[in-house]
Length: 97
Image (cartoon, rainbow, N blue to C red; front, top):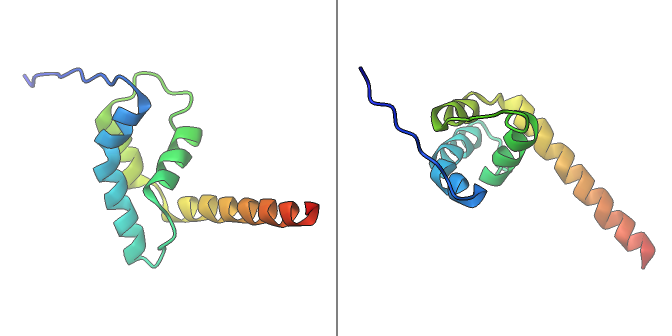
């Protein structure tokens, strides 16, 4: 029988550092597909907001699976929407000056 390990993290930053290699790997995969504007933090933020938000007792292997299985079109759309929002904010701030 396989030994079960319980890994606990003191904070979200510690968890992020632990899972960063999977995020990096996904970014490289997307880059090879020509999607070179997605960053590790974008994937983290998307999954935190959409997949993990309501989840309890997440395990590292499940989180890594979520990262690696994330559909490129979904993260691409998410990042493009963020870029549009940032552009709108910049344009709105320019109108206020």
